Image (cartoon, rainbow, N blue to C red):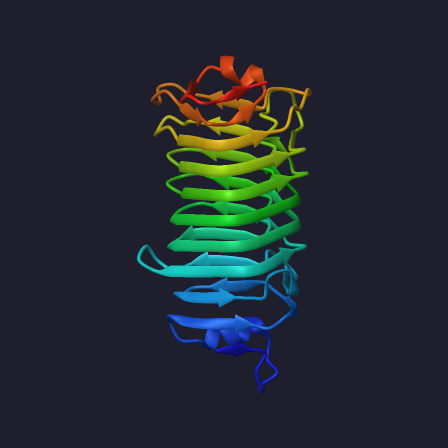
Length: 261
């Protein structure tokens, strides 16, 4: 299916009418959100040439049930604003993202670019720039949400906790290839790049492989907090290039082949 079509309707109307499992090819252009995806679908654009703006909220919300799959491919999402997930909010489902560029988005609470409250998100070639939130300036993963992130970049993001990424609850996060530049937490103990926090009901699992963090001097790049009586919270770090101060952070586990500069 190709959009725009002869009907001249909005992209949101077109998606609502598309059958489950449809592949929607969106032509180059700028389109207004918000888009609510509630059934399995593939939304494919032309990279930077296909822009979806937040309109009166976030560009995309996804809730397709535990067994549903959504694919977002080659899109630019921008100028979104919401409580959670300035560009994308995932409540449940299996979400695959590839070649997604997010810029100029804000969340009042969690995830300036993406908030994962549940379900599974696998993203590769994700680029996030100039996003803000209270927790997770670029990305927030919590509750039972899962995030697998590959070969991506985050820059110029800001939050009170977790300038780039905040992980909470029983979330699972695995990163293989991430560059973080100029991420900032608003306090020295907020985690300039990453803030990880457990709760009484459980502790998140975070594994970082091939991560490069810039050398912010404002505060600790990674902060790990544990709330009693939760299990101990660990961040496993391997083959990464990070400031030497990270090595002594309680909860950070040296997985080997790291460069401590």
